[in-house]
Length: 98
Image (cartoon, rainbow, N blue to C red; front, side, top):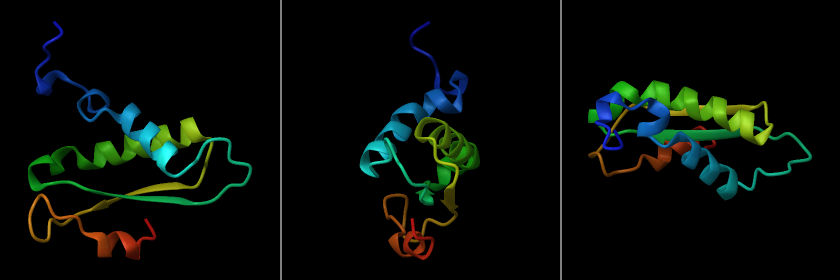
């Protein structure tokens, strides 16, 4: 049925990995790259989604390398929600050059 419960969706479907990867490629202007440059991405999940976080990171990293043609892509998982689910840990991302 079209009204799939989120428990029956794959990680790719539930987190819309294809849309996320396309947005990253567009935002970082990764189309038609003539030189290889490392790409670091930092993701932060609220506590109630941490059970999927590593899978999402792997799927994004794999899809990003496949669609952009880059080989030096790292997707980091920031493992803390410092102040709450809505607060982005920008300092940790900066330490990773992400």
